[in-house]
Length: 433
Image (cartoon, rainbow, N blue to C red; front, side, top):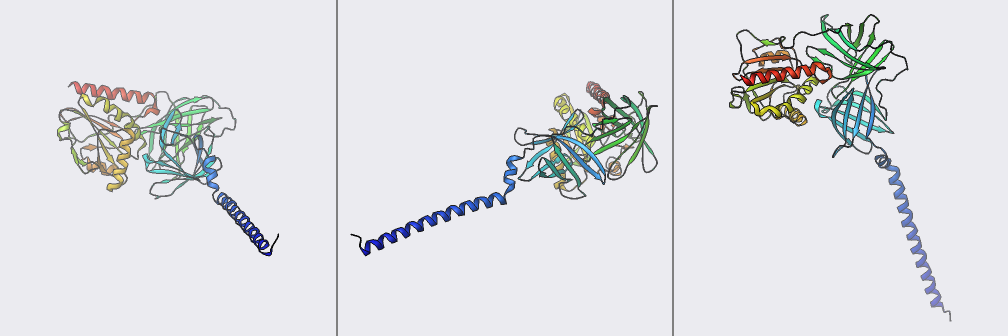
């Protein structure tokens, strides 16, 4: 029999069921709204999984309004972390570790205390080249993925093959010309080369030829290099080096016998001197002098250098492995550094990075800032110091046997192989004394 009490109980039971269903619906709705909110508020999470940095890239620096300098690089997986490698002609130059977040990429270019800071925008990157301590003026840069060309070609056929050697003069603001040798190699509309100066070479330049006009650029992490000009039918070359600081005109003429002054006769000892003497600290404050026991009765190589100097980078990439192979023969090396900052934290950081990058196992000392006047004061026996790097070789008796101004790196081809051959011949001869 249906009683009033049973009817009331069923009604309460029904209300409990409705209440439970309502709570379940409310909880489900809350979870759905929360998930949609998180999805809307975190679009970068989708971007992190969708964006892949690995691959080849074409970058563009805007060095001043309307002036763009292209460069190429590749991001590779590496053994543990992604790395950026700069591509210039046949060179692959290690840039630094790539750190990617949800919406940005940061590449520490430790060799030159710089960094590339990018925002991710689709398959493109937009950002700046700046100092790691954020000082100075940043340089605008952008990059597009999957593009392996450097300069855009209009399809104009080169007017000829302009490969060869050129006598070149760079005009300075003081009106005094700087002589150089231009080395060019052309295949079709592609051209590569370098300018060899007494202070060193312009490293690997790469570009194109359209008609009589040429365009060359290079970048390894310090500052972008950009050359443009034209070749004449009569074998002449005219153009300019373009930079944010201003343009430097250049001119010259084809000459397969083009040459520079003898690099072994530009810097020398002052009259009355036969040796060098110094006592400079390393990064730990320990003084190092040529009178130390470890240098006695050994051939000693001194390299006047700096971590900021591209040609010094080329020299270190040669001398560091060379020393490891030859130290057992009775040879020592000292890197005499002139750095842009001398506070202990900066010097320790700069020299430690340099040491690690090239696996340097010889002594490094700090002598001052990169100023010719400072070099002259710290090494008073030297006369006519011109360039970083400068390499000094001393015999077993501690006397200077040879001084080489500047450095002809791998980009100079035969000049580089000739230097290496002469260097080894000099060391061999001194070890036999």
